Image (cartoon, rainbow, N blue to C red; front, side):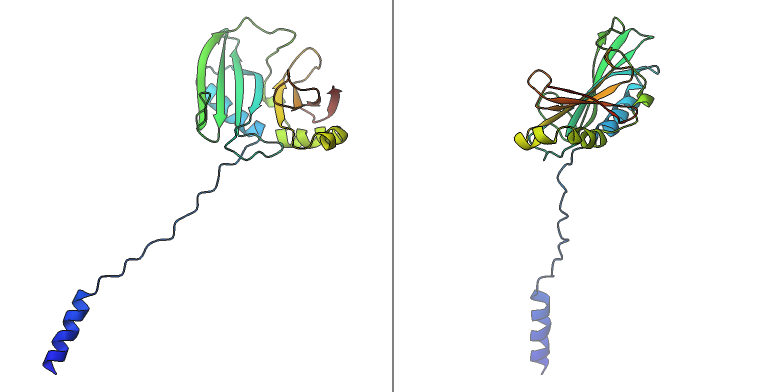
Length: 200
């Protein structure tokens, strides 16, 4: 009886403690973001450079490692100008680290000289941007349905700027990777969201 008790104790001591492993938490893949959201992230950082900054340009950047979504982009680049300093500075916002000096979050580029507004490129207040890239894409698509059917899956590029063509800043929704390589784009007023023109 005593021997059985001793054997039972020894067998209990020799058992390895059970290890409990916490289930691995799945990390969600990076998601593209809307242009206005990215613009404000960069604008807030740019205010640290100069408090009087205005927007000169915003453009989208597609990245192969992030699944595309119409109306959004994996990275955005904005150029701000400071009339007080007479300087310009570019910023990027990316959801991942990527080639081309793209860093996750906001990253500031180098300062450059700025000679002032030109007819083809005029700075504007960020408050004028009342529409977002997903909204303007939806509006543009209504005027591009036939082209979209004939060119399914073609990449979409966004450009936000103010030129002499229109009184307010405009979104240009481009079917293609750049203005130079595209043969179809739609202009949408950035303040009102109203369709302005189609360029072929």
